[in-house]
Length: 208
Image: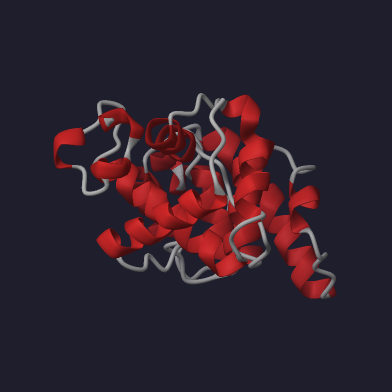
């Protein structure tokens, strides 16, 4: 697998920033809303998630936990019965940590012990809700790295990719990088890529 120099990853982020500007990700108003979004976004589009989040907007975690029709409120996000259980799990965790003021240095590992929380979800919450030094490695990230640098990463390389990125960028840069990759893959680096109009195509291995 080709080696990706640190300077090349820094250059990629700079080029993406030049194109899209600062993203100020995650699109949420509070740590609680980040957690809600991370669970609800599993296996569905963000458009469907927004509808569910709107129904929970302004509600305290304790009120959501006691809500009798929570499943119906989040139905638009799909797999709503399963996600209701997962959401209650992370909100219970959130309430216990905030009330006890015992937020650990590395929340990621505790989140991974919760039902329905995989690495991508845990890293999203740890980064955007609790501002910890990590980054989710989603399918967009793997797709862009493989096309742009000519690598052949897969989901099995999650920790390798994550380790490489957190070894180069600080926490605020990681927040931006994830948002930039997401935006670029939605706009141009789709499953069927729009290479002819891609603003960073000149450095991409797909066009060499």
